[in-house]
Image (cartoon, rainbow, N blue to C red; front, top):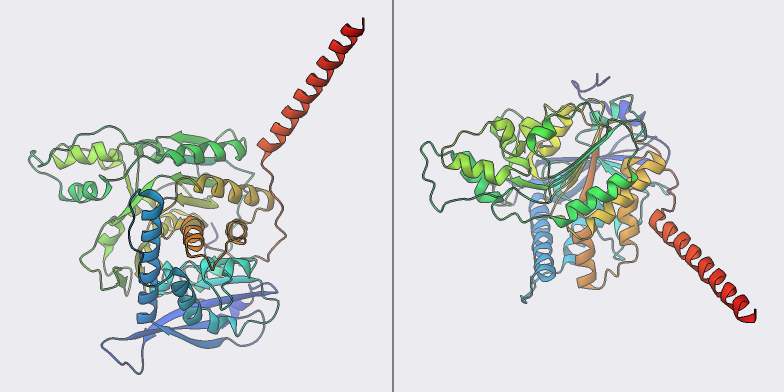
Length: 480
């Protein structure tokens, strides 16, 4: 890989030279408030770089604003999840989701949008600190329109220097795909009190977090849908109920690596009032690479055994920590998709993205990471992923294909209807894509038709012809 730019900071001129016409790059910055009204106050600003002209500094909202509105959004997402999955009723939070999405828009996007030239349709952003956990696609403007319905694409970058990474990437059609699903866990038994000697504290913490994870029927459906449309390459891998050993044994770097499984983020003693950890540098807490992981089929059984003092090798414990992920062979991987609840969460590092699964897969070599900022809805995600992959295969534009899939699922939503808004945001707003490489100019996205509809039409036509011929034969026999 020709990632020769990764060791130095990008100059704004070098970044500007990568931008196509009709695009903009927004580099967000979290900084100490020069006029603090309280203790250790911080605010946000943005450096706006356009294809022409000097960069502009744009002051934005405060960290207090961000944490408040993200908290309202989270509360509403939890409420809507409860409504959709429970037979009992509960009272909604006091503040509406639309208020949160407009509050985030007005403080962290509207000031930037005011400086965008007319005709800007392609956006690259590099969030800082807590802004890494904002899904810009579902922010609402003053007319309650989603950002996904206003721009042709918006993609995330860890930092501005990632725009300068030049890589010779294979087309999505030109290499093997690996699709990994974990719809069920292996059977296990966990005693109420661990009896074994040398009980593993980390395994106990992991098991406390994953014990309540239920089976994911949609993961099997997702695997089937993707297998149906993926390129027929001899090196492809389709792994239902995958074990950690199978994932580690992938024979070569897949062009696309798709996970449909549970993910987790262990709590940290360093969490602040926002519930998140914010680090000043990567060396501050190297153990944070072991806070997040992907859960594979043997995870509950393996960690229940280790909790009782039974030795289970790390290669076979059913958990891929972000530190282990970085050793996967992904040097030629275009896209890693983490179709898992909260797979994009982690500890934000000032000016350098997020420690977590996304960082692990980036270190392994993947050019793009598609992840989720909140729980994934099992019954709608398989169709969403199929749409995204169909568009990607048709255009070879992964970032724009994700944004377009969100647009197509959000464009008809009545944002004045609280229930409709919350359900749409829950189902389709969670996904974000972080990439390396130049920002590409938007292309025309094709209409995608489900080939199964065509097969049904052919089948119905054949049935109609048979009925017609049978009827005509009977009529002739009757006349005879």
